[in-house]
Length: 418
Image (cartoon, rainbow, N blue to C red; front, side):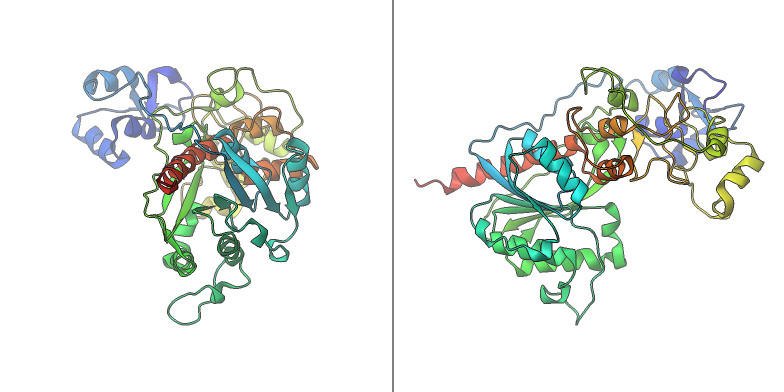
């Protein structure tokens, strides 16, 4: 990284590629052709670009003053209700609440996450336990949207087309069962990006065919990047939207914002939060890891270590392919955080603080996921990290909520008696 150079004066190759909307391959070719010359950072030998030179050469189409022209905000014209499944510690639920949707019930199996939900929202109806043991038919035609971050499980295929009955025993089956019982105008499922390619796409196609079978048309699936929705974190979530077949209305995903927020926006007073992050407990690195990470500069990772330490620290991973950019990673103030994991001190997925050689604290974790500071997490420190790491970022949930409100406003305006 830019260890011996002034960071504000230089751009990495990935930062330059993003700014110019070009691939890193194109930039390397331009460097070889002399169109846009890179310099080499002395410590790492990485290609970096003089910021002033890039802005001078490409000023005609580089917008350095980011002004938002987009807003997804829309006011709810009625009181809309949500039934949330696999609710976790409430990231999506809080986001939907901020968008004006009322949570009528939430189901979650983890007792610590349920305790967190009850602690923060005593008025919410928390249905603790295995979803398979609950009957949701009491909510039939009484709920506007069913949401759920169902865990991704492989299906057992029976025949060429996966049907509702074939998925029995999986958690997506339970999600679909509840949607069928409740029959809302719209349902929203969310999952990891990897679902796109799981079993060569057959798992996702199976889910779509099941929703079709129970009476829902699926909107083209989209992966939303959290950094485009006021979240200072490189997290991605696949969104699966089903519209009941009797409704002839288009659903539109929330529009992405231009501005990207960085770690400093999460932890320091600014646009996202009006005070610095509160002090809180947190995990610690063992002495052996501290000695290694002390050598890594902000925005650096394992490649910034001496070769022998790289080999020792990484073990067999050193000889495997891939960039492995999350290993021995120290996050910089002026970049979004990498996707948070459920354990901040986990081996080889380090998310080290920019200035102190330690993992992020519980409240820092919560800030990066855009939870409000007054949202408390129950259980041990490890359980709190797990709840936060598994959550949908609150601000992403809010923007998704606006898109749901917009759809429901349209639906109910068309449904009113003439």
